[in-house]
Every structure is written in C-alpha cells, then in structure tokens.
Length: 190
Image (cartoon, rainbow, N blue to C red; front, side, top):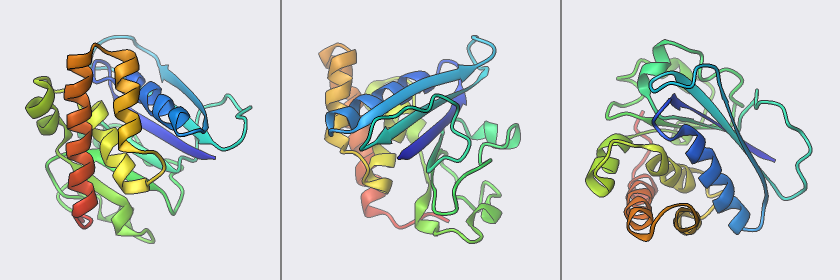
C-alpha cells in the first residue's frame, strides 16, 4: 500500500487533491481511498487529506500516520505544524515553494534520506500561469507523479475531466504536466 498525506489550507484544494489522486490511481487499476480531516471549515485554516493506493482491497479507515509521501501545499505550515511526522525514511516530499530545501531550513529533513525524493515546486506560480488562479493542488500531483512513478500524469488529466468542465480540466492538466516535466528533468533541489 502507498499512502499519501496532503497538508494545506482551506481553499487550496487539499481535499480535491486527494480525490483526484485517488481517481487517477483508480484509473491505473488500483484500489484507492481518499478522505479529509479538518477542524475548522474556513478558508485559510489548516487542512489535511489522505489517499491510499493499493493493489489489494483497502480495509483500514484511520488517518495516515506513517505516509510514504507528503504533499505540502502551503510552506507556511512548515513553521506551524509537524507536517513531516511519521514520514517513512524512504518517503517522498513535494513542497509548494520557490525556495530550495536549504532555503526553507529543512536540511535536517535530508539526514538519512535520499535527497532526490524531496523537492520543492513553484506550484502556485505554475497554477497562475496555466489556470489563472493560485491553486497549487493539481500542480503538486503532477510533481508527485514524476517523483514517485506510482501513477501516470495522464491519469490526472482523465480524473480532472471527470470532475471539472473541459476548459478548466485542460488548464489543470497542462499545469500538472508542467510540474511533471519540471521534476522529471530536474535533479533534487536540496
């Protein structure tokens, strides 16, 4: 089973990201599960969502405490919460930031880890360029696809077409592809 925890703020599409990831993985023939966890349902409040991907039926329903991958949609959460809690030693991390891991003061996160599995992506900038709005969720899914190889970036595009009107789905798919291409060609940015 591959477990993903997504951290962000209300209004950034954290819950939608987990749902789209589950749809993409389902399209690739996996069993999936996606669900949110939040206390205050207001814009800007911290939100966490979860996605499980497995080749077998998923029976567990509890929150993901030891994720295989983390997506951090808002880098300000790095100073407010322990978003890295429980991350497996071989885990993947995608952070929405124009800064490097070193610039974010996260060099300790790299200790004992493969630095190529921890990246930052200017997801908000890419979203503005392709979608016209600062919503980084789908962009970060494209980056996670490139980083892990666990699901196809094309499957994200198909999932988008199931959820959104064609024009919006196409713009988001282009944003996901841009992030995928960025991560696929770039070395780790530690």
